[in-house]
Length: 551
Image 1 (cartoon, one colour):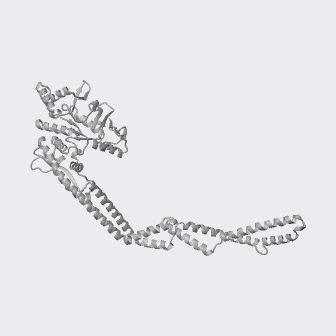
Image 2 (cartoon, one colour):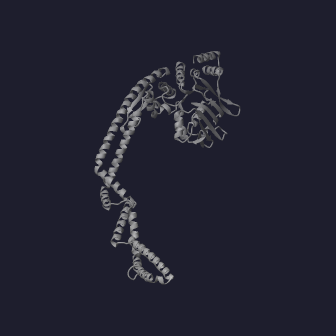
Image 3 (cartoon, one colour):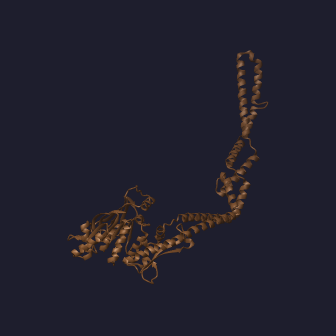
């Protein structure tokens, strides 16, 4: 619901602050007083293209701020666009237009685009006039309005459509994989055979490289290790000589104390030399290499690395690659069965969707009949008794089936007997268009649409009983929504719960447009003016009083 509108320096409006409430609000004034300026100002807040011509002469910029009690749809749009809206917080849209044509927009003081304002506007306000092309005149929304009128639940269709699409996507992916695999079948055969012959294992490259490096080190020091073994071992080696010296010292060690110490030292040397020989032997065993084994390891290592480079993977990934390629090859060889299963799944999902969508189509056709009768019942009181209305429910090509079903829905009218049916925008014009929209809105009641409706001169070209019927229907609609009506009809104006008078004033230098909320006495005077013209008579005042009492 629109709760407030603040306008600064827009055309003839210098400064204006208005508050709005629920129900039916009427805006009246003489022709040319500036009623369109209010709608243009609100349009700016709703994302209409900024025009520097709206900036009041002599001002640097114009600004409009509109405050709303936001419906859930608007809050969802804000969340989708990363804007915050706390529960219970008003939605304030502000638009600034500079005299050079530039513009800026804000939603709750957060910068926003004009596109976002238009998206929010779809949930906030519907403006219906002879040049309006939104709301009920947009065929894209007719299907949803019909579903809301008929209380139709399309959830089963949406679920079935998602399942059908998922099955189709799985089949398409499998067919694409199979086509690619078939194309590469020779390559797959060769690669799988090559990798199976190689039989790579994870971690094998590292083990081979380490073993090769060890054997290469052993090759380099083998001669030195043998020389050390020769010096330590054998009949002429160091250990043999030390043991021989120890045996001689044992025989003479009693001759002097120093000889016993010498024997102990030689024993220690024998132990150390024996330990050294043992370490050298173990090292020689560890570094021992077989030239044939080294050659085999090198050949295996180079083969692993070469095939890994060919497939652009690491050697450790070759085993996983073998599994992947083998699976692809198996899919080629057995893919027909898998694709047949997927094709059956698509067919079943298609059948389920089609059944649900046809049931929804039948329900839409039945609801369309009821909607047509409801609208037809509203046309005669609105002086459209020669007109006819119908809701077209037509099947779509299968390529256009969607989560919303398999139907195209559009509202059509024929304004004269024998004239063909056509969309509202092609047939109705001026006040007829607004009255058709009013008839639709009454028939649809609260089913869908924005919470604030604005009708611009819906009573153009009618009076008397028709104007009274329009006022009656507007009042009925206002029971479940906020309506603002720009009107020249006293019968409509009398129905308003609130009344704003739009008038021009001139101080000899500047012309300004102002808006005045009217109290009960002022309302009677304004309605009397609408009845009698510039000179307000007592009879006009009495008739205005009767209209207000009847309302």
